[in-house]
Image (cartoon, rainbow, N blue to C red; front, side):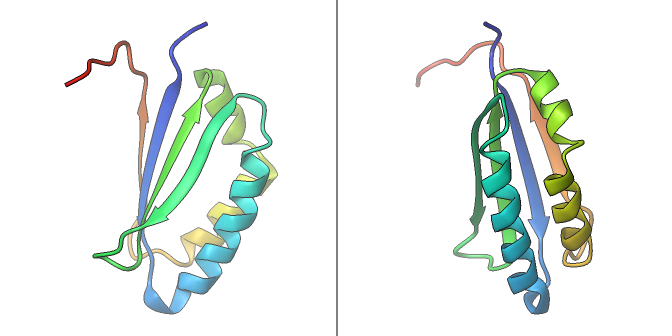
Length: 102
């Protein structure tokens, strides 16, 4: 088995669009968690910076991430999210090779 792939996505959402963003995210998260290869998929909002959302995903393999990007529920979320954000989201894909304990 290969190392899991981590995806971190950050978005800043306009205050007036927060409810629409959260509703669309809920639907997407529920569907994504049922996808083959999804180990974890969670979204968090900053307590100190309202409207700053971070999504942390963990996938078994990169091919699962690539398949996820084509799913209708993600496309629907991105359509809504695109109208809610103040700037394009920042998305990072991390393929760890090792983890050290501190």
